[in-house]
Amino acid sequence: MNIVLQNLTRFGDLLQSQPALAELSGQGHGVAVACLENFAGAAALLPEATALFPLPGARFLAGLAGDWRQALVAVTEFADTVAQKAAPEAVVNLTAALSSRLLARRLCGDAVRGFSLDSFGFRHESTPWAAFLEASSAKRGLSPFNVVDLFRKSAGVGQGRGRFALKCPGEAESGQAAALLADAGPGALAVGFQLGASAAARQWPVARFARVAGLLWERLGTVAVLVGTGAEKPLAARFRELYSGPCLDLVGATGLPLLAAVTARLALLVTNDTGTLHLAAGLGVPSVAVFLATAQPFDTGPYLEGCLCLEPDMPCHPCPFGTPCPRDHACLEAISPDAVAEAAVTFCRTGVFVPGHYPGARAWVSAFDSAGFMDLVSLTGHDSEPRAIWLRHQRHVLRQFLDDTPFAPPLSLPPALPDADRQALAQILAQSAAMLRLIEGQAVLAARNQAMKTRFLASYERMSGLWAASPHLAVLGQLWQRQAQEQVPSLDQLVANIRRFAACVDAFTQLVEA
Image (cartoon, rainbow, N blue to C red; front, side, top):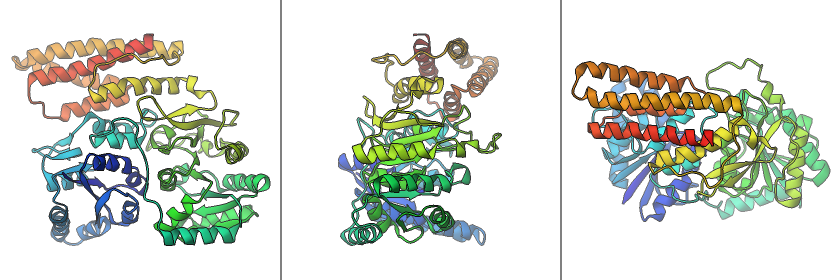
């Protein structure tokens, strides 16, 4: 089958599509890739892509400022080009935006996996996993799944352990990278530093990166390799003011092929949560990543075993989107650079990150779980905290709920929630179970009684509100709302959907009360 995999988002997200692409290719499909034009270089790192279709999104948007009809013609021409050259029999769309849904439907009608529109123009997801991917992205701290696994499941694959493997750098770029590193520090360990991030609130202070680099140079004789975009040159200049050791400053000086070649030769990357983190993971390069503000490692951490993820040990982390920080971004200063340097030194000497004391941080190391999903293992004892316990509960229950398989208890129970959390959850779960029983009964009666339909709709909304107000079940509330927007073919299907949610609530109840 000819498939077009469509990912019209950022650099890192596009790279993280590779495991899904690889599984589709492994099933015998030919998979072309459609992406934004400015990330076409990243798509070239996807080894299984049979063709590449860069979409000039900026030009389309600029065209709308002039004659919208000409912009529409340009989009149509792009879709026609993809249709003619790729002859897609299906589209895998991993971008939830309306524009991407429209393009996917334009290319393949109903034969779309992931995010699409139905024949009436309403939002449609081919699998509950795709609905969860979008719902969880709006609720920070409530997704227990790495986005790579969510992409895999949304694409209709994701059986067993995923493998993230980008294309190896070319011979010319590899030679150039080797020469640059040899000139900077002959024989020295090269440690990369990605100083920038997508927002200032997610950017660890440059002085802390410089402190880490200085300690590594003193103890291991490393050379600091700075990578990043041209917009991050001021950060690199500040780093060089603070750090007096050997430094190779490549910020704004490499195209993507050379950046990949340099990254592939690093012993370690120290970074914010950025696309470079995922480039390193796809090249098999270990990392120390700092997750601040809205960034958290459970969903956007590196898809590579043995990487260190650090987040502030603060009850407010991760921040919700769109909310001003009431603590003046105190998380920027929370994580000790000396602890980061100590962890990096230990890794460079032994090849592993070890449990210990990481002042100001919750420290996690990436590892696959028994089901083949990327997971995190605590190095600082934070897996016994309520947030981590609830994420563990969610991993177990939601995986079965989204796969629509019978619920089975875990092989081993996670730690119990503290009494206050357990009692609050037990109460809302009991309310949920009772309300779902009521809604199921009202659904049956509403099919024969117009007055009961009003009551059914009101109860449905109350259910949504109950979950939306919960710090633990808000994602379930979003999934419940999305179900309301889906066209249901029959009463039996509606009742079956309500029972699925009831079974999910029952599974959560059993875990909470165990």
